[in-house]
Image (cartoon, rainbow, N blue to C red; front, side, top):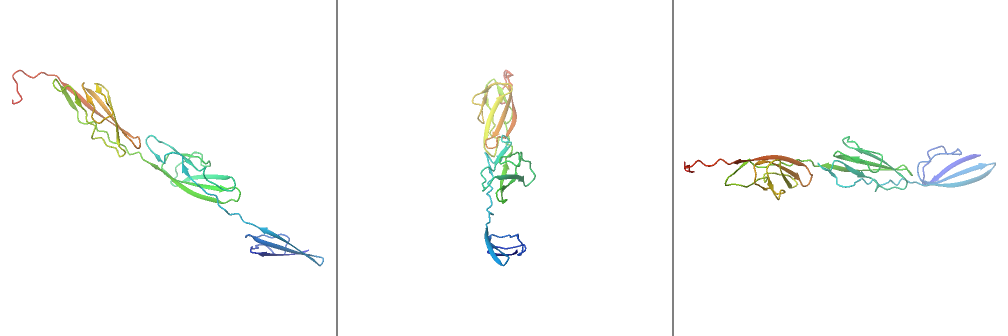
Length: 231
């Protein structure tokens, strides 16, 4: 037999006069066969499936690492395709990922993370990226100047108002020694005993903390008889 291939809308890349050939485009392909003076023909339609999947990287929770959030989970499970999907995560700056071939890896570093999804049905791929940020800016605790109680000044206010934080300040005073009167979560609590007082300030956005100490002394020496403030 002799063979002759032709096409409508396609592209034949192999030989035209063999029983089999190759093509690289969708279209209608016709093979004509001559045997003993008889001619037969047959058609075949070659389709095409190059629809790419959709990579959809998300972050399951907050997208910013802080002093209290030390890792975040990336989430590629919302990606879609025609067949089963394979996942391949990577990072722009080389930050490690736990389970980089799963839809839900965990990361602990700020970076730009890229997700490639591969559709098992047609071998097509899609790529998308998502960024993980970091905010670990420390606040500044300032418990104020040391102070002194006296026979007349039996209580005084501490002063933590010089503390600062970019996300707002949360105050927590405690008495290492001495006596601290409630409330203790304000900038200027009252004490009525000498001692050492600790201030912990927390940034209300990133949870970072700083600590400072202030000393309160007591002066109980009685005035000298006959002395006056004018002397």
